[in-house]
Length: 214
Image (cartoon, rainbow, N blue to C red; front, side, top):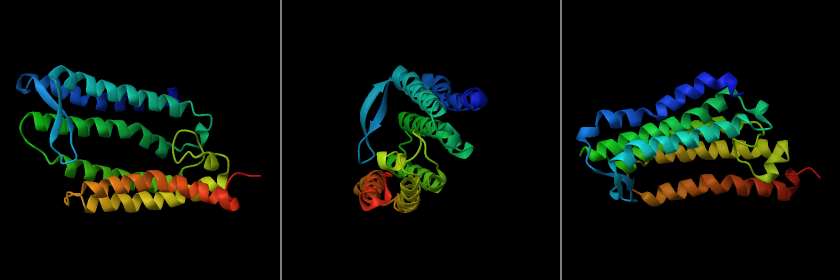
């Protein structure tokens, strides 16, 4: 599977490293201390050296990306992972890297972007895309809502992912529509709901006899 996706691995890795290239181009214009962490109000509350911001962050994302790709391609049930779903796995890290690079360099150069709005809009769109994929996702150990009850029963898996798909689309749309409201609590509430509600639902199916095969 890795051999079949060699070109995609190379392409996505290069996209992840684009912020590193941009940092080198902007090197002389960047301050020695760069904001690399932002608080709930969208204001910088953590700073790092220029070399750390330019080199470490993209390389860290690249390492995480390659690990995720390796785990997915080595999945014992990788035949159940569609090419579209695999493509989603490949492109999440590049999106995060480019987004982080834009925010980091824009802030460093004094543009003062609205970090919360930017992040919430991107997250909202991403969750809607993932929500569209979830109902089509077949049983595997790498992608999806991997509760033990879903992994051991196809019906539980299918119903859990249909539920999660609808939830993630609604949650993503809600985040995108309220991006300019400045309500951080809403972002946290939606994220918690999308993370835990599908797991609770999967267990509820199991408890009602819709889960693990007896």
